[in-house]
Image (spheres, rainbow, N blue to C red):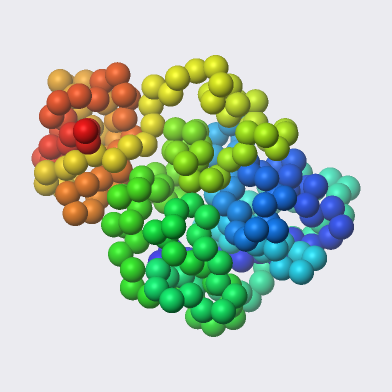
Length: 245
């Protein structure tokens, strides 16, 4: 599994601080894990993560290679808020079988099983995570989710990663406008694929750029497509790509 880092946020202003920054509603922490992202003011992706209530503090589970930049970004926004951000010695374990005590369901999709935070070694139960992700069009940090990503094009609404009623957060205006005032013309979707091609291969339709190919598993793949150009047999390198019916 990709290496994760668990940060701890403490202080009396933690909830209000996070509520004004992240895409999801911090009030949902009372129900379990919250999946959310932090965006640029222009509405583009910076990092996605899980949040967990831990006593009076909040744990933040993020990809290790994004953790330093995220901590720096949070510190920049902190100003005079009573919030402290520190690393922990916790690790993530995850699986789709029987959940250990203290584990919580992954909020993105039931098939993603559970996540548990422990001082034991990071690991999982051998589940084919790519197969699950492709089947349900679930993007991965650093693969489908990049600095050019708009979260609605990446399916965050279906993944329970954005709340449209919580109020303002950084990048909220652009996200709300994409939700209410425009029809998405581009985005991630599941396609059928014959053959294979490297992640990041351009998809062509009638010789025109139609998108980008990402994770592949068992004859399916996640692709970012321009919907107006995506039809018939498309090419990604030597592979043939088709929209699912």
